[in-house]
Length: 605
Image 1 (cartoon, rainbow, N blue to C red):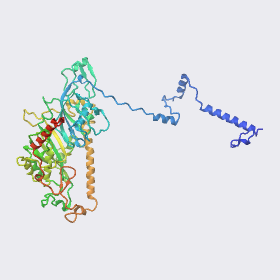
Image 2: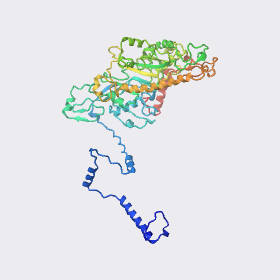
Image 3: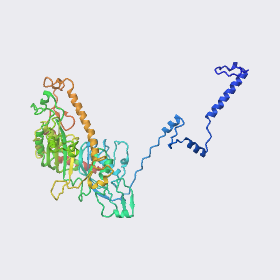
Image 4: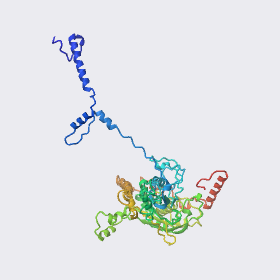
């Protein structure tokens, strides 16, 4: 009987089992089921006092509390996946302009123009690149420094989405806005100036505005307010740090350099500007020289071999031609006519027109050679003398065309530079400048090209004291890091040097482009040095790599020279109509348009 009660563990055919064995098997399975149920059953909830006792028992003797591990891997993974939802964007904080004082100031700023569609913004025009005015307007609105009378359509100011190619609307009404000069697409400026009315930290009599760049609260009718409204307020030291405020929200290639707290009465950035300085940079050689005998083949149709190898410029001839620009002349043959402005006088004063070599020891970043920036303390005059005696590099050099004048016509500088390049390449004589300036003999402009935009910089805008007769700038500029406003810069990164300073930011911009220059130059040297060098020179006048009977390569300031047929001299090119004829035709077309009931455009008004 005991044998019958044994429960087999490996048999599965219950049909052969006896009754006693089946009963024993069922009893065993029920016991196992109850055991498993008890094992996985949820324990009863503990009372608070029991939980406290258990916690005290489980606490380590050193007093440190152990973090409870998740009961299972799945539970731990679920906890890790729980991510807090992102905070909603802060709503735009509007401020009441009536509670703030405003003041009229001038701003001097710089920009690298290659990423922008020029300075001037035209409402309704869809440009592929943003304009400088568009970026400045956004920065002034973001910092709540201006209060335009109409802000309809400028919702893009607070947008962080990628810029779309569509019309953007900005409005300077109520801001007393003016600009010194209009730079074209791709042109840079290091001394652009605007006049504008902005928010001030100067408190009103019964309310004090926080002297902070993000101020949008006030203190009203308090002793502190009345005390702050006394005449002890300094309009520079206690003012908002305009330079650092704007630089924090502007793109890295647009930097505000200074602000003028007290422009003269009636100041207009354009009409008060007495002098503008331009610089145009170019390399020598202008483009990669044509190697071997092919570099001296006459390709201008004259049959005479060139004085210099193709690619090199005659700097002395260019200097001679540039000097003819100086003085007061009619520059109608050195500009693009804007008939909408109906200009009748093309006389402009040129104070300086010259070409100089940039000393590689001091340009660019010449400031790092100064004693306070040297790697080691200066040991004396001998070290500086040795440094100054170091020879200039003999590789590709950089020259700059300096141009200083009272005012300039549309595209005038780029037309002047292109004529100088033609002289430098031996395609024109220096006297071509005199011929084009003689509007009695040549009243119609030849249709020649103008130089590239990228190397051109509006270097500075000068506002002289007309009473003194001096050409020096008379505006009192407060530059970044000025000691008069050092209190406003503390802790805000608005100084000249140090973390967040303008020098640190511009160094980053320069170094990025410098590395690109070094790598591109190294790659160019590598490509020239590799392979069979005999192919560089060739056996005859026309090597195998040279295209037969190609035309002259023409340099106009761009990255590549242009190749065409035989060169056509400037004075033999097709000429435009007389200025008077073009102006009269445009006026007649405008009059017909008005008579037909069409509304004049903004440009025609």
